[in-house]
Amino acid sequence: MKRMSSRVRKALIGLAAIAALGLTACSGAGGGAGNASAAKDTVTMAFRTPNWILPISAPGFTQGENAIFGTALYRPLFNYDLNGDSKYSIFDEKSLGTTPEFSADGLTMTIKLKDAKWSDGEAITTRDVEFWWNLVKNNTDKWASYREGGFPDNVSAFTVVDEKTFSLTTKQKYSPSWFVGNQLNKISVMPQHVWDRTEAGGKVGDYDRDKAGAVKVFDFLTAQSKDLSTYATNDLWKVVSGPWKLSSYVPNGKVELVPNENYWGSDKPALKKVVLRPFTGDDAQFNVLRAGEIDYGYIPAANISQSDYMKGKGYTVAPWYGWSITYMPLNFSNPKTAPVFKQDYVRQALQMLIDQKTISEKIWGGIAAPTCGPVPQDQKDMGTLKGCAYEFDPAGAKKLLEDHGWKVVPDGATVCEKPCTGADQCGEGVKAGATLEFNLVSQSGFAATTKMMAQIKSEMSKVGVVLKVQEVPDSVSVTQPCEAGKDCTWDMSFFGSQGSWYFPVYASGERLFATDAPVNLGRYSSPEADKLIEASQFASDGSALKDYNAFLAKDLPVLWMPNPVYQVSAFNSKLKGVEPQDPMNLMYPEDWSWAK
Image (cartoon, rainbow, N blue to C red; front, side, top):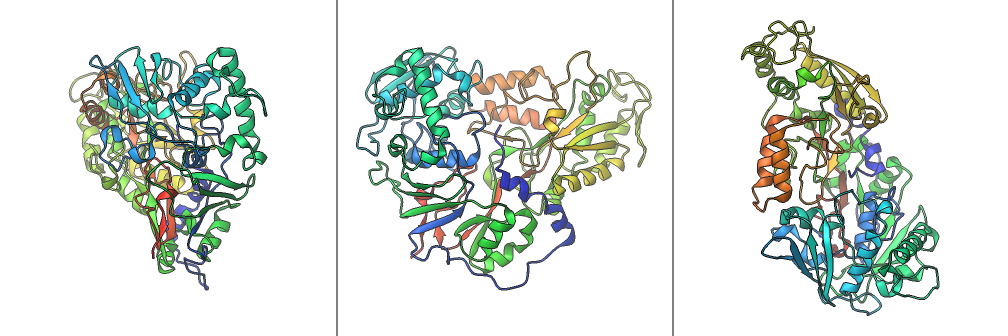
């Protein structure tokens, strides 16, 4: 699960007050955009200092800034472009590999590497892919991207064909889109001729080709990556494959990137330098942004009312929508309320009492968008209700409950008067006298979330649905799946103030909504959903993901909620190439340039 950076989490805290009071921009003079980079060959941007350089993800180091930093220095086998129309959404210009070719039986994919070179002039070959493969294969317990049964467990053979060609054979036939988007996205290409050593200054060998050696190499590289003070001086990190190289690095401070003069790609940087500048908090960053001393920053939620002011100062203000969804799990394993949640009409009524569009616009100040289902909307539809099976409809919710044997008690507790399983009765397992009263555990620390829950609670009370809201710092830990025989007190949960789930390119749901999936907190279970999720992973038919999305959008394994944007970017309007912002939260400063 990918979360927002800490600066964005902090930014959301003050938003509700701003939306409610309609505060205006601060008075006083401020500098305009364009003062930051007088030479106009440099971009200075607000950016949390990255703290991981090895292109193998490590637990505790998976923050978004590390992915952006790593992609600038080391091109992966595949990058992806959700805004493009290429096969499997592969971003060809920014990938080292070419589009995989699948065998007739669908089990073997063959991949060719481009004619590319490391910054020291050595050719990038399949030996560099094999090096990565050997390290992760023998160190899965230390790899943050590893999930038992997933990649590389689901591969029966890794085969080097020649210096530019290799193949992978899977243990069963997968959907090509799923495998290319959600499995091959993990492959990095690393300089074996420099990194295959077990100690600093040690001889380079083929240590990775046996398990013991692979463990030693992995441990050595991990230790080197944790030594932040040597990032700019360590010879290991001077050999790169990306368009940028590191020229200066201060732990917890400023980072400077300059072009890799031996970069092999067509997307060579137009800028001479990118400066990554961290700040102690939102206020410090925004004051410097207002003064025109940085070219690219963000508008904190507490200052969102100053968007027009910033535009007048020469900045482009652009909400950055992520490839993500936000939702409220329902506890299908709570013996008291599960029978109620298992009624389709109850879930539908609850969803119809959540005014996603108004909450997104008014409470979140326009920096959130409705979630309609398990697959994120296309970027062009963000902010609309396109694809939503249920819109805000209190009258419709009231009718659904009354038509199924409930006595609606506005500002009280709606009660089941007609138990049993008839068409006009409450449904299987719902007892006479049962009420619609639920314990909602919600994320604390976010004023917008508090205000949103108050609004939802108010709307639900109008049809006798009682929410007892408990705010806690870590709502996920409090609302883990209930174990049989143990007390289970939570009914609904919310942890989406930063976005609940960020997807890889292929937004399948095997980890979220399949029966007994690892992040299925509410233990939702549907044979039809399981069938569709499996089809989205294994079927070659491209419609499988659409069918999965359509079914779950309507079946409501959770309640869909407004999804906050990744951030509200503000950048000098003369800086070109920033938009469209990548929904998978990467940045490509090699595409940026100053207008003449």
